[in-house]
Length: 407
Image 1: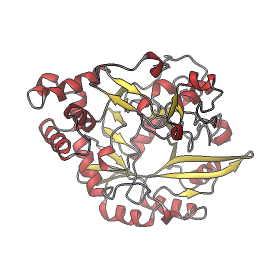
Image 2: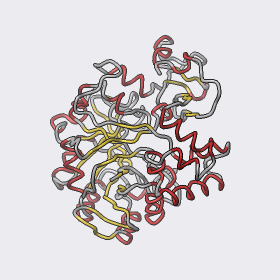
Image 3: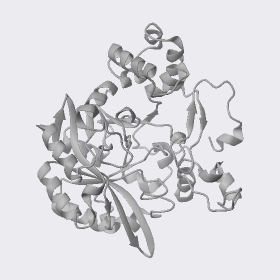
Image 4: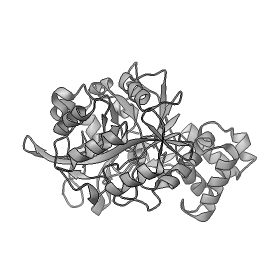
């Protein structure tokens, strides 16, 4: 079972109008995703659509078009704690609509739920989590993209330096954290404090085609409660691995200053006292730098009970580079759908289809590109300060060593 547990509806800001249940289900099947979290259940109109579109299909499970859904929302907690402004995004999961109604009745005291699919709440994360557990012990919370500088548990500009600072005596009441697009499990393994939590990876998609860029792969179909227990127990028998975006491609992997077009490795940033070498303003400290600051282990450490992971590039991006055109062009989309129809799904192509079979059914350059992606033979320029990084397959000359820094 492949699960993407963090997406958004069209009622979230900067989100495609296509993010509605029928289209989400359509793309989930194309990609080979079996379970999708609904996102945005606090938004009144989206909740109405969820109730109309989804049918009960098991314990805490809903269904549309052959795809499983579980109920969740990402909320933006903005509050002051110990004299510092905190801005954290958190994922809330609920087993049924009755529980969702209770959660919404509570959260509406702290923000305008109808203003955005991801509502802004003037509410301490600790106080919110405590209230959620009082509403139902079946609710669970996952801190979202925990390293993002501006809106995350460990964010360099918005978060905390430890889990205890944020969650206090509730730190053992949640059991998973989301690594986010700008970090992978290997980077998170450098912090021993995270050994107690299961690392999950999700797309945070704002359009259907971006679903599945990160997912969680389980051995078998799970209902809501089974999923919760697998995450709670870090069950390696049932949680097989995550599929990861290359973290360098994330918008906040390296340090930098977008206005000055400056991208620096953590080492280079520290050499410049974390100031922009062009304008002398403070750099946005990226995920890698932040992890190095808080880590207590060397790069490459692997905990004994860790869940493995694989790095991939979305198939549409591979086709686009092989063809030398944009990802959202008609030619790329047509070839993507054609291949998914032949081989079953995007993940079947990326993970399992033989290169020989691919060469017999598509342009050889596309097959070669998929082979290179599987082998990690790539050219990468890390993202910084809100700018996505680039991952190239066919450039002849690789970047100089100084450009890749620690990579």
